[in-house]
Length: 323
Image (cartoon, rainbow, N blue to C red; front, side, top):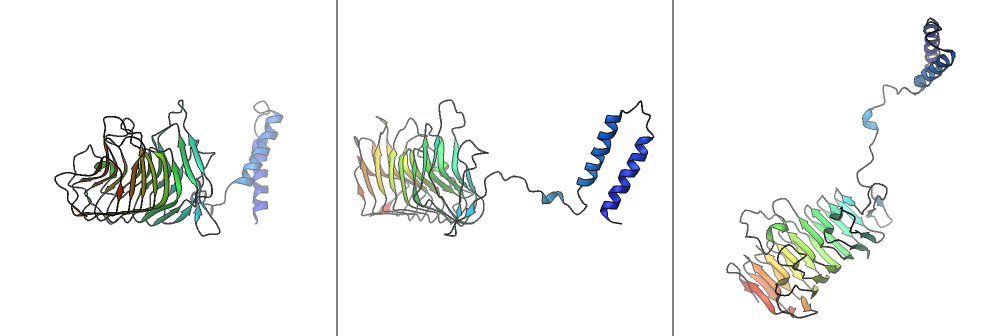
């Protein structure tokens, strides 16, 4: 017997049962409504083969789409989020196809977070010349990443409190801020982060990375050394961990808080790091500015850098360098 005959039999049985109900208990209109609704339910009852797992919930972050250049295009789900939120949760090549801007007004209390969040290893993020622009807030991060072998390149970040921060489990750049004591138990895995060909403008900090074997090169960094807005002594770049290469970056420093100190580059636990071919200049008075700060960092190589700060290098007693 097919499904149509079964539905017909069910309807006849239902009618028979309903006709036994006292007419005073159920009106004619109600009777018609019950018959119709029962028929509708019979038509739309899911078959036993249908699984609940087959119904896919709406993803928390909009799915990226492939473009002609074999990268997944990140997109802001404007219907779900009132500020740019884009996530990367698996390895692969990703890119932007437009600029993104976030203006956080005084009345908006959600002025912290990150525009792009990476929680995966082996990720290549190509801005393709586009810009992440933030205004009205310094609590926002351009790119935040947790993993290994993450590359961020070919774009611009403007107005952020922090442009790019990359780390792996075991060590965080936040553990190495100049005001904090040296941590001896942090473990530096081979992270291999790369930040290159990026332009940072009007940021408090452009780049901070933690791990071993990272590369920060060929970037243009315009940073405000504003001690009142930063967490402790301000810096434009922080590298936490050994064997990094910081090469051919151009720094422009300004707005240093009077009576404070600030660093273009601050390195901690950076044994064997190479700092080469960088240019550092200060727009206003150089008083209090430091080109390279070394904390618990041995055998750091400094060569062919042009540093126009009050103090080119500052070392603590646990540090040494090779020029």
